[in-house]
Structure formats: C-alpha cells, structure tokens
Image 1 (cartoon, one colour):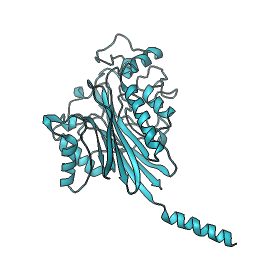
Image 2 (tube, rainbow, N blue to C red):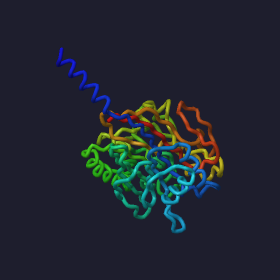
Image 3 (cartoon, rainbow, N blue to C red):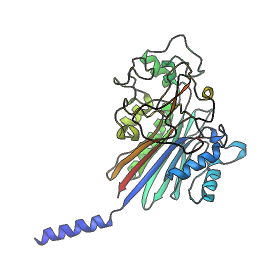
Image 4 (cartoon, rainbow, N blue to C red):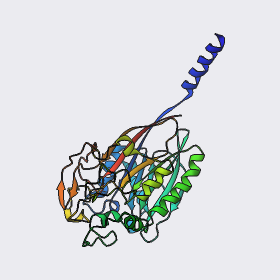
Length: 342
C-alpha cells in the first residue's frame, strides 16, 4: 500500500509540473506585400492583429523601396499593441511572439525559384523550429493538366494527362529541391526535441487532394497524381494539418487559390480563365510528437473562389475566418491551432 501511495504522489507531482501550451499558427501569401490591392498593407496588419497567431509564415515578402518588410510589419503591429520578433528575409518571412534564439536561410531565393527560412524560438521553455516556404512557381504542372502551360500560362491545344510526363515537368521546378533541404535541416531540429512547423505557399497541389474520390472534380481530368512535395513530406513523417483535421477532400477541399478578392478585377485573379483552377496550395505541416494535439484548423480569407473567370460562392463544408474589410491577397491563408503538453 505504501508503494502505491508513493506512486500516486509521484504521478500527481509530475502532472503538477507539466505545462499546457496553446499554439496558433498562421500561413498567408500577402501578394507582393499587400501592394496589389488599395489599402492592402493596412489590411495585412488588420488581419494579423485579428488572428493573433503565435507564429506567422508569410509569402511574397519583397522589401520594396529598400525597406525591410518584416521590420516594418513588426513596427506596425507594435504601434497597435502587439509584440512580435522577426529577422531579415526576402521572398518569404517569419514572425514570432516568442524571442528568437536562432534563424537561418535554408533555401535562398535565386532567380525567383522560391525560398525557405527558419527561426528557432523559446516558447516558455519549449523550443520550437518554425519554417516558412514560398516554393518555385515555375514548371507548375497542375496547370498543364488543366490545359495551360505551367511556365507561360498560354492555353494548350489539349490538357496534359500523361502522369509520368506531368511528374517529370513538376520536378523540373526547384520545389522538390527546396523541400529536401527543409527535410534535411528539420531532421536535426527534431533530434533536439524541438517542435517543427512548416507553412507556405507551395505552388503545388497535394497528393491527398488528387485521389480516386476527387479525380472527376476541379478539372482533374480523371487523374490520381502523387504530387511530389507533399508526398516527400508524408514519407518523412510530417502531417498536413488541414488534411489531418478534414480528411475528406470532397467534403472539405480547402481551396486556397484563387481567392475571390473583391477589391480587384477577376482578370487579375485567374491564370487559366477557361479552367477550374481551384486548388489547395497553401499549407501548414508539423512533426507529430507526444503531447502535441491539433485542435482547430480553418481557411483564412473570403469563402468564395474564382472558377472559370467568374466569382463563385463556396459550396463546401470548409470553415472560414472571413475578412471584415479589405482582403489584401489573391490567396487564402490557413490557421491551425494546437495544444502542447510538456
């Protein structure tokens, strides 16, 4: 009896010493720093204030007019009462509510073929490695399937439906090169016991969205395609927050592009005006570890999309945090919330 009593006391002490940490992560392509839409920069600030994420992964950081965008956005948020930390980057960017103890360039931008950056933050005693990715927009083979050239976006005579040729064109991009460097670097972070998050505009669909169930949706041309980047991530143990929370791609397609941005012309939102180009190309991935639980996921942005050059209301079961005012981008973002017991 004494041994049982001591065991119960020990267990109670361990539970009392453990911590529960909520973590909110936002990924958002900000469309050339919000400069494409009138009032876009202020709208980016408004949405970041509203979401109040712990970590933010941004795509299309351009540092226009010799400015440092991440410094500027941190200052704007500070003026409105929120403190974030960041560092210099180009093409993609990171914000953290927690002090940054390390940062690195994983895949530097070279000729507009995408980028990946990393920060390591101390989150109340638990270290977290957060990566942002804006991957190569060229050799965008899912457009070839829809009858448009994935480099020039010129209309093709016929859609490309040979899966081997589709995948060959897909890996002619530098998306897979970038994600392999992420996997290599993040393996070291995981070995240190750090939680790993990756968010970004991948400019590539998910193999979890091009399945037998979806082959006749959204101009998939009857194809089931093992898209490269998400397949690599899954093979290396990473989980797609959206598909973990919403496993049915028919009921919850989670399209993030092209968003129905009401403050610009439809012609500026569509690259394939005669096709159904709706796609989920913006993601949050994470490394599953003991004590980390995904609790909530939603699409951030207007519920409507652009379909064959027309504004189209949403008809899916997806959950949205819709903008209250100006929406600054042609993408929709992703918000994922977690609880970490450590």
